[in-house]
Image (cartoon, rainbow over all chains, first blue to last red; front, side):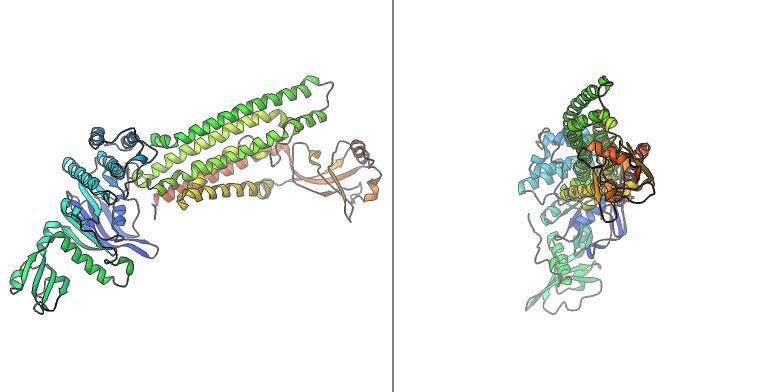
Length: 307
Length: 331
């Protein structure tokens, strides 16, 4: 099956500032992908490149086997809900549905009207008067009713209050189950990602830090706790992502590609990690590598770990 | 796509239509009144009235309204360029809605092409309707006073306003596409349009064809607004009707005698007694002449087509650039 996204050395620069550096990733079809990272990590850049709203500075990107936004046929396969869910404030909800119907050959009018009714939107209301949550629902409906194969959401819930956020994610999950689409969504809310995503891409400092199916990732990442000094020399195949030391004890987050971590460090305690701890370990590492570049500092722009 | 274009453009189109309707009523009334005056002073009194006095009457009554309406005919393309052209792309980018519309199943090339063609044609139609109405309303006046080649009237009649509209809208679109902010794009569009409206008639239009240089005799019919005596001799100015219907390019020129020497003040001083008509007749009998540079009346339509075509071509180039630019994607 064609991967929904395949990029090779994908780079986007604005002047001298790198928004995305050498991203090489492959995302298989049928996943709900969570794209996480601090603000300014390059999440929006990657999503806009995927939707074809912007073009890469160098490198290649293929979405569903073709260059993004290259043709009407390609556009019809990808639904994109941009950050802040832009809508035409002068047009009514019904006008937006008409817009969708006129501009998309595979438009599903039944689905669109059902959704609008379900979330309680008044078709005659001007989109400019909708609340943030309602606007997001309208944008989601527009993107879904074109019946794409891939839906992209750029921070869909960041501007919403907790209740609207929950309702929106609920809608999203319903869509995914109903329409059998692949989804890529970016968020800085790790709890949301953990709840809905089965594939993960971690971005920090414009670079991809980690990518893969959540299950596989959690399989190879472990927390290792041992007396101080015992873990100074680790066998090959085990990579330290994060290390915390107290006077008597060391706590490591490691990536184990040998599958035999417990046997290799028998005297240490090995624990499972949850997604949040794993992501934070990578982000902390990326931040310390980039120390001296204050904008990227993880400490200044912490991720919210909400549940 | 046409539906969306119309839906977004509807409000502006209705305002334009209402304004156009009001102007049309005004121009029809003006046209009818000009015809009444023309009939009363020219057609229905062939035996009793003189053309000179008819010209005076017409100029007194209609010079100002026609001049002001003429300004409006040039202003309308500028307004259309600023209010229809400049926000076309800039406002979408400013409000972020380009990210919505560019992700429907319509390539952004087609999106821009449809909007550009639609709005440009609407602009041309608006300017065209207005120009047509004014050209009709003013036609007896223009015929009688033979001044339509004048730089103040030339851009307000016939086909050149259509070219201005085509240029203004496409320029507005391109400027909006490059600046990406609505208000600055509108201001720059207006500035560019105004700059061209000053540059073209002063620097470019006079040279579209090599001007004709001709020595004309100073006769009793010649009217001159200004005699001035310099150290070299007498100069004259304000002799526009020396070659009727032409666009006079020369300004102050020396008045020459039969041998081709510039007339000295003393030679004509005795003619000036205070009665304008007699004074002119007196000077007219002295076998004097002067050399003028002008674009003849017969070139009027050549100039109309040339200027219209140039603006249309510019508009086409700008449209092509806009399409090329949007295909390349926003950086």
